[in-house]
Image 1 (tube, one colour):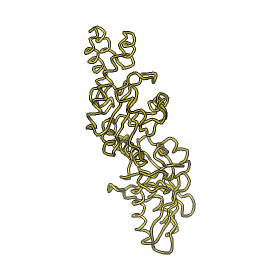
Image 2 (cartoon, one colour):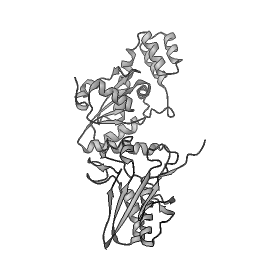
Image 3 (cartoon, one colour):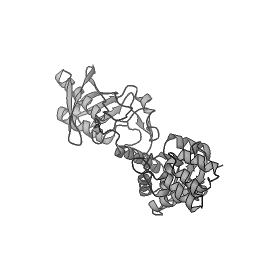
Image 4 (cartoon, one colour):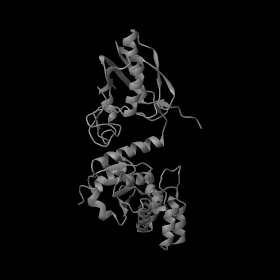
Length: 361
């Protein structure tokens, strides 16, 4: 299998552009490239694009990662002051502003995360000594690109964030995805929420909104059901409502807490087990077992008037989720069919609706 190419973070780009800006002003010449020391101890050699005197850009290379910031220019102007003092960061065009508690920055600050700030500060100190300085950071078109991210959910408004804890971008990093989801959960908790809705993606989120009403706190957990249940309990959430397409969530009824197809399957086996326990004819069970997709199994179950079996399956899914959270929170589960209609609800759904939805009629 081809090894995926790593990229550089926006934090590394900002640091590189800051180094180039400072060198240009002190030496009178803009460097063609600079060396950035990443937090993981790796040296990154970044090409510099001169914009105007003292203003430099580094173009973000996301490697083989799917990233809306790939190809963006991170532009920095370093203003060095006469007196000694701190290094400040100012967000200009395309840089978001923090508007909610729970992030790593105070409300009102530009969304330039602590590690990138530390990177740039450490690098600049080697050039300007203890002088005070202001870094003006911008990303042209950042406000438009930010709409393709989760920034607004996180309370980052008006642009992108300058990110990076390692300085590099590892393609398709599941760890990075989990970290991002966890951070969004922290924001909801910091707002005082102790109830939350887990959905697998945007389609499920929209379906639950249409079916039950607006949600107080909703989190797209992707395949990480188990990890996010653990995190929710650790953060103090008391009510967790899980909803989505049964083709994914049926795996939870078998105790599978990561629903990615590379991790486990067992969908049809789970359906067949519950069908057998309900006394369904072996020939029908065999037809379900030989299906390729859950959607096809649903068709057979409709034809044979077996949709009632989903009631026992959804209760089992709730059981496994309750077991995962060690009774420290209440969990409800709803299965949706391929048309985003309710297929089955676990026993806790009605008890929890008023806790997690703004409208329950």
